[in-house]
Length: 283
Image (cartoon, rainbow, N blue to C red; front, top):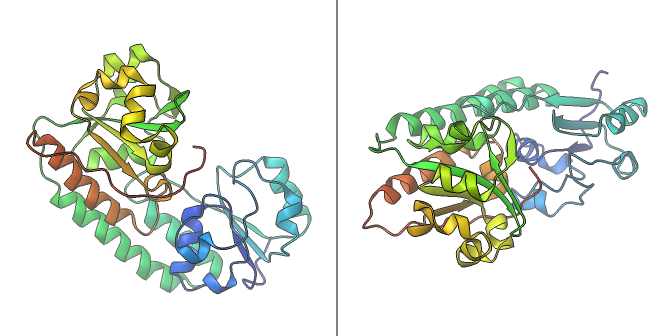
């Protein structure tokens, strides 16, 4: 379906929304999904639900002229309904790798009809990522990192290579324990697996950490984590969910921060930092 107007845009993904704003189309965004927490202007807009569990009616009510989504948007029948209503839908690639942010920016810019501006922004973002990765120190030994999704003490998933946390950890000089655990997507992690993996560092979202009552609550609610090297040294890094789990314009900034934090944690005389962040949705 051809795009005839970009006057009323609904991005169905937080990073896509951030890119739309970065490209100068923020004043045309009429609603977002729950994952859009940045920039503040996007966070303040009406929300139409979460991208994995959409409903056609509230979306159509905003009379959008363009929907921008990633491949996790659904369910499929809802997307089909929206297209049957004549609403153009563009699926933006979402690659969990070092070039994923640039690829996403280029695709959004193409849909908005500003490919040159997209190429410029994508180049800037890619240069930031490449520069950060090139400057990362060689950590010896490389800290093992468990990237966890938390929602209260009962929900704990480990993220694998299908998530951005995987390549970010590796680019920052760490080793992702998901490889040892054989996790490629995301999976529940048992106490036994936690103890066997023995991560040096826990990487979480700030809202996930908040859901268990902070660092103290994390180790109280999941005692197995307290027995790992990460627990013994209270080595917990927490970042905004959209920033950590997405792959958007601020990815280079995040990688730089993660590199610094991992390097600090390898110095046993340093106190691990807990970075500020924001809201979270389901993985």
